[in-house]
Length: 351
Image (cartoon, rainbow, N blue to C red; front, top):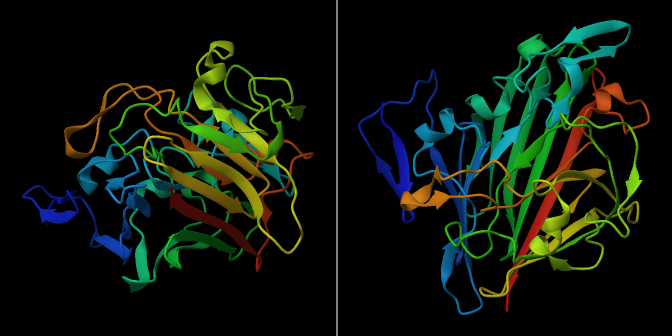
């Protein structure tokens, strides 16, 4: 067994072991100058390498040098989180007349699936073509972290053309109704993962509402308009421009504006002026959690970098937080025989 590390684009094998029953590896998808690396531990997105406006390549994803470091990660760098991403208030919910108590891991609440969610398990590899796509699979058992029913999960990362990255998340309920809300928890910095904070990034976010929360970040059940508030990114502006009106930064679920039924919703456009890089995001889900890494404090990352406060931004497309306890929110319940489907498309340019 070996500690799996990747530095400066190379895969290195060290001497320490990863505790695993199955093999853990790093996989690369590459077309031209556009490449991304992943691991089947947590189905984590490890890196995305992109050219800037002058052709200089940088990794724009925060993370660690070695897969081993993701085992004890509390940041969820690049991970697929679930069975239910985001928060469940009181770590419980009712479904079909039965009350389910799930594992608490944030005070009295559940965050990102519990103390050992999908980000902390080893996924199988179903299919891999290094110039095209990779699919990770996981069979979540009935009662895992308190959730009901067996669930077959698959996540596919795919290159689309020369500058798009697609993510397809699917989950089939095999025998019981269960909530499902998967999310990709990548931290982006378009200036490069070690280039400082993201406060000067320009963001346009196509969500006219937010789901306000209490002091434990549990939704109240209301939906509030963003217009005229610090949460208004309907027109593009710098992320840090209204920070003085916020207590800690952004950790907010936006209610995305609807698009044509035949098309994915456009979520956001992010731009970084020095590199010229731009990232556009689309999804089929109703919400996106915009998070400005408010809890990072000198986290040791790739190549000896220290990630400080607001070093990255997350745009986690999702169902609304705590939907299992708010009937007015879009349902996350998947019944036996049904398949949960979640799509994301990222488009990267630089000029």
